[in-house]
Amino acid sequence: MDPLHQVSDLQSLLLTQAAIEALIQQPALAGAVRSTPDHRDRVAAPDAQPLRDEWRHILLNRQFDRALALTDLGQQLRQASPLGRALSPVKRLEIIRSCKGRSSNT
Image 1: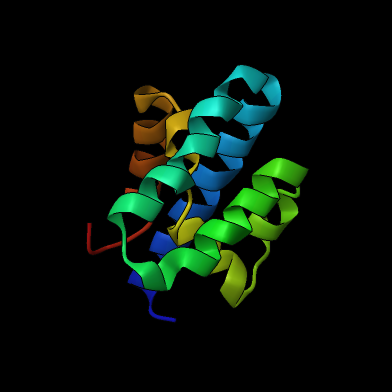
Image 2: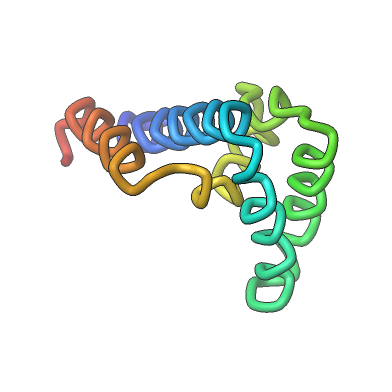
């Protein structure tokens, strides 16, 4: 994997970790997060349906390790993550900025 993609995957991993921590600390966020795959069913490409179904399973069973796995599936899940609503804009930007400093292309 080239350095730019490594940084992108690291950013996705860090965003996912932070969002999971937020969900654990603030369970009330779960409702908004759980509604995201349903919304995407109506507006997104059908070929991503298996990832949305996997996210439903992860959220329902709180099996967050599946999304954090350093595997191809884990990477795909992070790219299709519904967890964005669990992070404040400030926290999201903090993580993005920390990753931008890791690449010479940014």
